[in-house]
Length: 210
Image 1 (tube, rainbow, N blue to C red):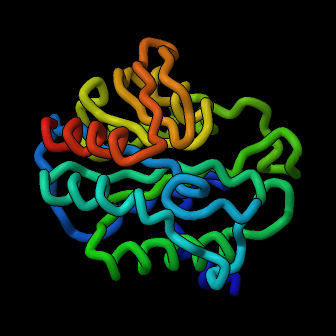
Image 2: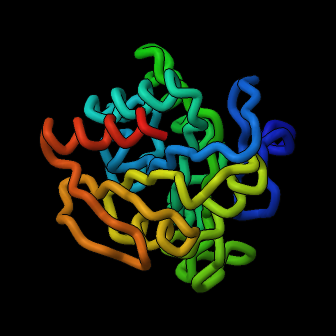
């Protein structure tokens, strides 16, 4: 098992940065950022078993629209369950691959995944309070921006928690969609709710306009 873990795309003990697929993007594009648990898939409270993963179907059209528009799709996910000892990077890898496989079955493609395992309630070396990569800090979005040469100001973010929106605003994004949320403004980010078909139509229009 230890030999397998060497191949994981960990750039530091608590940060996973994985480029998915071989699509090449010109620099200066916006991206569609998405949280994972509770946004792309149903949140099962620290998901660690691939068999438990169920996609939220309303997230498929935005990802597919971004794919068609040639916009990079980037997943940014906090994974404090690793720091807390509930599961390890091996379990994360299996769950994450299940998410990607289920998306692929619906012709929806993710281009990069970033995951932060740091949390103050964890054990060394993951016991870090307010790590810059952990949302609501913007580190994962900024890291993706450096890797892909993104225009963050034009990028969009979808999440199910205010921390997702705050991370987007602090990374310089100006528009976000909060699953089952309310309209608001956060750190310069205009937050729109994502609750019904009309909200989804607005999001799809925004993606198509990028």
